[in-house]
Image 1 (cartoon, rainbow, N blue to C red):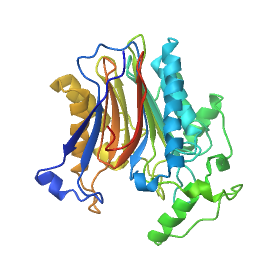
Image 2 (image 1 turned 45 degrees about the horizontal axis):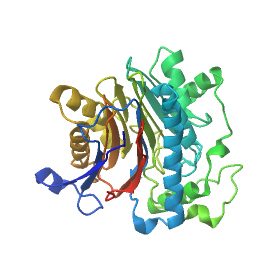
Image 3 (image 1 turned 90 degrees about the vertical axis):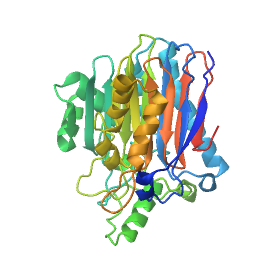
Image 4 (image 1 turned 135 degrees about the horizontal axis):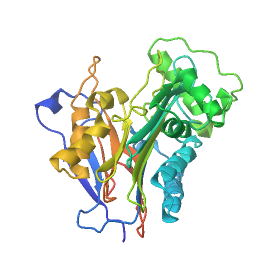
Length: 369
């Protein structure tokens, strides 16, 4: 089956939207939805690399090619596991581990910095077959937070571990630990410096072991508020899994945690219904409970994955925080039959999808067909 993709645009309107003052002009949702009439694939996978101010003017042809190649590698990795009969959990973990090692993304190596000049990493994973879940927050030494999250799910009685306790647990599970300098990239450090200057906050000392990078590493889009990575997969046994990993937001303070490690906000999976991974300003996604809300809309209201995704993102975009900023971001969704949907209210979201026997779809900008 060739992967069928249809793009939908929903223009924001109505009184709630008039109160939402995003820096972007008109809030526009770009959606990718499989046709409901297509036969269910044996397996399916959808990946995101973050949503945000990602515009053609900000991406050189070389950098755009790097992002598209990275998203294709993610499909190759996950699709290869699923094609060989591997589990959706294995596919989700393997793809996210790969993206956590890729400095293009705000997860693992390449994560953004806190105001104190450290990297604090969050991740979650959920098994749609049993609705078991695991999450970690505030990791500073574990190389692959997504593997720590899976270990919490499978080898502990808990769902979420944070900080030094999560690190101790990861060490006890023999997960790879690295020096904090492993996560450093010049691009993210410069973004931190700019953020702190704008907010009249002191710039911390440069991390030990950090070395200057070539100028080329700095020529990235202004995506430092976003960049979370996420994967949702359906395997040949009909099991859905979802996972999300992030470094959070640049200049975050006081141990801030966003939606990525929160089950029901940034990640959710339920066999026969849907799997979701979200990216964006996490505070809004927590308030809406985006990931669970999408699945509930599908389960109880009979909405399609596309309709549910668009409705949840509309709700995020209609909310304001106490600084008058509106919610922004995006989601990827698989329904119980492996059909793909995605929605965003940002100019772009790194995203890709592949189904058994189909052709890969890789997109970046919101207006891509």
